[in-house]
Image 1 (spheres, helix red, strand yellow):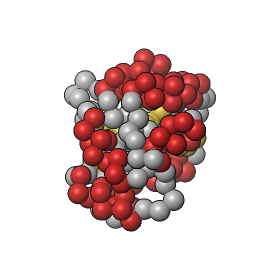
Image 2 (cartoon, rainbow, N blue to C red):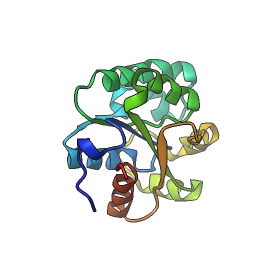
Image 3 (cartoon, helix red, strand yellow):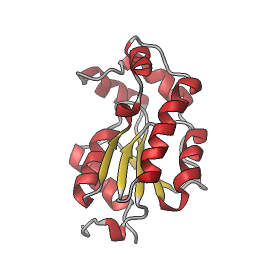
Image 4 (cartoon, rainbow, N blue to C red):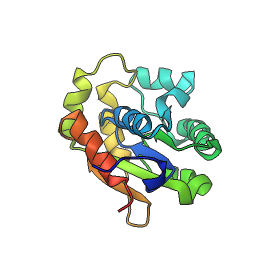
Amino acid sequence: MDTLNADNLLAQRIVVMGVAGCGKSTVALALAERIGGEFVEGDDLHDDANIKKMSSGEALTDEDRWPWLERLVLVLANSQTPVIASCSSLKRIYRDRIRQQCDETLCFVHLTASYEAIEQRMQQRTGHFMPAALLSSQFAVLEPLQPDEAGVDVSAIGEQQEVIDATMAAIMKK
């Protein structure tokens, strides 16, 4: 595989997106480590009210998400180095907002998998505030990347290193 660095990436700002449990954080962190970029954990940008709401099994509304998304946009737009963020970005309107600030330097990586595969992962996961019960609401609002959006789809199914390698290959300039 080619060496991955800031010069041969499709974009200087990468948002690894998808439903809870698809591996966004793991993949985004691996990308950041590989290229020496900044890793941003989207979950860390939620306020206490959002975390409490999700922890209790209640899905966030658009109104809940906007302040969180604005915090992410600021981080992405103000970074002076390559930045790789994990962020669900489930709706097109959220991705449009991110693109307004960073359009020419932005690429979305959509980690895809079936409901059943993600549900199994979430049931085995410990220490995360998002319960598996909220997975159906995530799939219900998920709007996959469209052809006019800068991004790639990568299967989240397989061994962790396989998914990371596939993601890295997908974000390299050809």
